[in-house]
Length: 117
Image 1 (cartoon, rainbow, N blue to C red):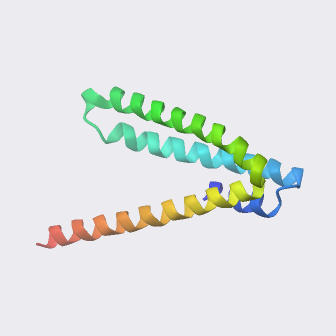
Image 2: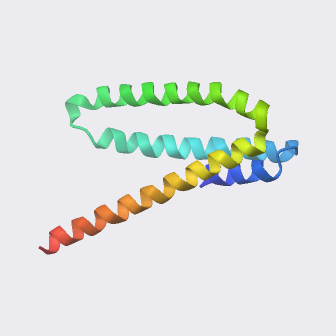
Image 3: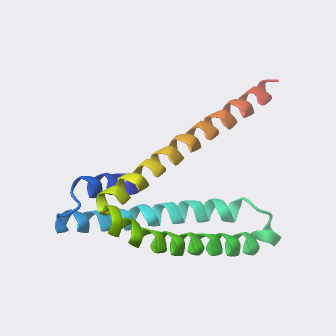
């Protein structure tokens, strides 16, 4: 939610340096919350003997995606502006959150149905 809020603020107030500072802090909080939560789930999910492999792959994918995002962000901001990038990322986050909620609710219903049956 912090990340989505940060995208909304940048999309609206992209030229205000104080707002950009607030956004950077929100992004840091959101990034930390996401990273800590997902790392905890990643450690708990696999069997003990393969946790290191899962964590290594997760770190590799995260860093590759971060590098790709950094490479793509420069030309996008240069061509369209920071507000467009923030709006596009905000929309992507909203879609991801919605799809995740649908998948979680669907799996919860299936688990409840199989427990009753």
